[in-house]
Image (tube, rainbow, N blue to C red):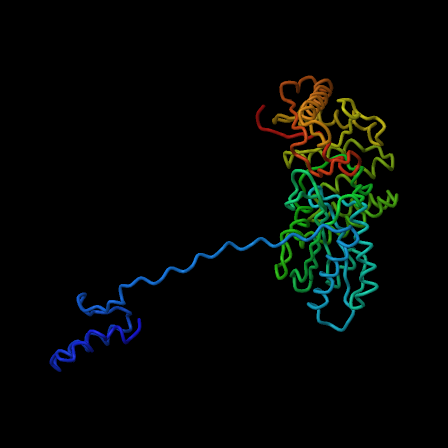
Length: 431
């Protein structure tokens, strides 16, 4: 409280006696430290009760502008240069530093594609040509021993509002550099790429995987990229599983190269680690067992189903002939469809829960027809399950959701958006 206004009543009383002035002063001085005046109300300063002018209302902060939609190669260059330049600045070391790239994925499905592989190749070339302070090493358990920088990223179809909903208009590109020594995010870059010049066909290990479900390990990777900012600690789940991720990365590379025996051993090695309970591990073991014509295929597929039951959701990639509820038996794994469904029916026969079959379609065509088509496809699958194990008829149901729950949403109706034409199995406590 300002001193001058506080003592103004005393100053105005100069004509009063010296004794009264002293008495008023003795009352006022000790209370200054408490910020409270004891001057009688009728003597209070007129300014003391005048309210302070209201502070002007602050306008809401404007949302940051979205990156422009540019050609694919330019989007990669824009995001990668931001990350590499800022990472070099953060490093501040004259010595050449190692970088490993944990392969980029789709930000919804977690799949690696030709597009994400292309991005990785462009980044490696960019480092080689313009960033001599870095050297790119293979992503492996051995390379992680030196605590290198780790580059991760997502590449995801989005709408005009940058969201994974509605009509997809561009690819959202997120790239993050993590420093394993400090445990921090040191650089981040974002960009958006045009849809029409991107090949988002999944790589074989993902295109051929029969099952999809939520996976905490993959989601931690996605969150580390999309949900982090510079200075944040690295996502703990991602960090705890990074050695397992490097082993899985080697397994996926071996599978994509047709080295199925090597891939199988690497997937099995990953499964033995604390972070090995992952869907891509179980998918990989099933696929390599199938490719190698091993006899224990039923057991491997059962592990996939167990994972889905634990998550209460399992999406099966069953491809149908266009506009029909009949399977497309030209698809390379279509010969396995009856086997997959028998396994599901058998497991459901021993389960206490009920099974809901949910049909999905892409957004191509009429929404009304897609709703009906998805329902017919779900009912067709339910009928096959019931025929395999008749006692589950009272424990299964079917419904269609058309294109209301798209995962990819590009509407290409090819391998790149096969997830949108899935049949899902949801496990419910009651029917």
